[in-house]
Each structure stands twice: as structure tokens, then as C-alpha cells.
Image (cartoon, rainbow, N blue to C red; front, side):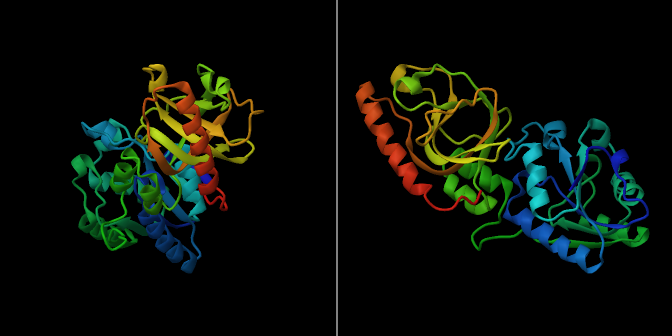
Length: 314
């Protein structure tokens, strides 16, 4: 998949394209369905499918309360590639981009650079200065400028729509298994392994401490079954993941750390890794003694082993 980080990098030549536009934060199941329908259109027309997304999130530039991300930009692009897009254009969301009128935005991006033949969006898509452009404007602009428009309602599981907000709420409440049903994958945190206080090694459970991700949706404090995924080698290791301040030792700094089951030989310092969350095992609590903590850790590891014994499908 080609990745373009500015409109000037687009190199379609004389080809037209089918374009799917959205923030696609987390590329959840609703996004996946929309892109799947766009892919069907592109395939029927023997035309490349281009995803257009934004970085940073538009609300971080024009809003007062930007949402925490569900995926890093690199992982978002990987997820879009898995959906079958042929290229992704990442538009830097700046004050200048936000100031474009709806017709200026559509002309510059869809007409001049992507030669759009067909545009696919969700029914809540807004664009242009102060979000003044809506799907009716998009349809009329397309009719006047040579492209068709398909608008799809937000997809639902019968209870409520699959949405980034729904996934984010589940994760923040520790309900990572419910978030998985919305995302169509395990919730993930990525970062570099850094040195901690090495207390886990002293207790017999050496952990990889993740550099605290910035602006990412982090599950509530607790112990989780999950996986540690090594970014370079793609090795997937079942892991018990802890989020919290280590209250038994009167800690004050929040940590995200994982013990890769039965792997006391790992040296991951400085390595880029991902933690995938399967299920919360328990809340973080302060134990009366270190022996009680170690006994509970052993039970956590065995429950993690049970929950990760199936084939990894992250």
C-alpha cells in the first residue's frame, strides 16, 4: 500500500480513483464495513481505492476536548491496508486546512489530486470551514464535478452503532473484551520498552515496561490477559499486563508493564513493542504482604495462560 503524507505526494497519473474519507480512528468494524463497500465499488470499476484520513485528529485543532486515539498513525495505516485500500493519503490537519471552504477542500483534494470518480463516506461526515459542508453539499458538488457519492449509515450490532466513542468508553472502563467486539481486533498500546524499578524480576516475574503512550486511550488500572507483540520480529507472546502504580509498594507513578509468560530470558530494552489486551482479570489492589501479591500473580499468570491458549488473531 502506498502512503502519502501530503497531497503533493499523490502520484495517480491519469488514473481516476474511488475515495473513502474519514478520520478512521481505530479502524473499527464500522469503518471496516464502509471500506469494504468502497472496495467493492473500486473493484467493479477496476479503479484504485484511496483512503483519505487526517492527522492529528481534527478536534485537536478546532475543538476544545480532543479524543484520545485508539491507534497510532502507523497502526491505523496498517489496519487500512488490511482492509484492502491501495493507498492512503494522510492530510496534515492544520488551521489552514480547517479554514478551507467546503468547495475549496473538495476541489483541492478530490478533484485536483485524487481525480475522484466515486466518493464513499459515512452519514455523519462533515468537512470544510467550521464543518459547514455536509453530505448534501458533497453530492451536489460531485454531480457538478464528475464524481458519484455513496453515503452509508453508521453500522450497528443491533444495540448501538460501532463507533470510536463506544470503543474508547469500553477501554477506559477496562472492558477490553467488549472493545474488541467493536474494533474487530484487540485494543492495543504501542511504545518502546524502558527500564523500570526491576521489582518484577526480583519477584520472579520480569516485566517489560512500556514508555507511557501519549494521547492514547489507556485501559483503567488493573491486571489484564493479553499479548506482547515484538514489532520487528512479529513474535507474539502471551502476557499478563499490569496497569497502575504498584500500590503494594506505595508507588505513585503509573506504569504499563507486561510479563511474557515463561520468558525470563528476554531483553527488550529499547525495542518497539505492542501490548494487545484480551480481558481484564481484576482491578489493581494493595496487598497486605509481598507473599500475598506473589500468590495472586501466579493465579493471574495461569488465568492468562488459559485465556491466550487459542490462536492469536490480533
